[in-house]
Image (tube, rainbow, N blue to C red; front, side, top):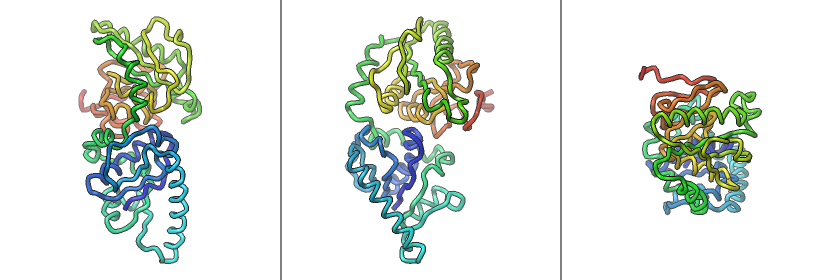
Length: 309
């Protein structure tokens, strides 16, 4: 049995750190408990799964809160007993000593408590094979989200290119000293540049605006934009996953949307970053692109894949 004992960051971080353990537990039929990962988000999702060995408590926020507290108390008790040799069936793993394969092996004979975020940067692409299908089975946005987002996207005329723009404002003012915090005018310039590039290819573009703050549509004057009213994080994530392209500041949130919807993504690394259409690429693992580009936290410029040059 595996128990994921951490609650890393916000929605994007939690989903990415959960994914490899979800996949490996599914493949090997290992019991997985994730009592904290969806705390505050469990009512965003619906599960189409009827199996009983993976416990996420999707769609039951009140039960989720209660069980999270119970698991925390139980872990403290087990850890105390373990110190005195009374709970030898439990182990708390350290990433320096146990890679994810070792964690899975230990879980066949012990209850393994693990911090999932310790492993998120080191998961090979091969582990994530089949991940999208499993997401659709176990962590699909609830029907209310689909019904809210779909009509807005269906109003966009067929044949137009749909670019999702993830505008991260409030929390990025302080994240890493604000290195990925951009004003609306910066996003506008990137959007305007893309519109020109698509026009040169005889294509019209519509921008789907997804943001943690609201603002007047007039700030994007001259560009065709749509947005969804009164959105939650899952509304924006689902909308981005249904676009043709995604653009935004480096974020696990837009990474997940790209991975879930198989949508090409391009991060904006600085205010002067010149975003090109041919630089968009799908996410295949955490912060890893299909074209070989790997995003390093704190990176301030786009670095193309040398193998393709």
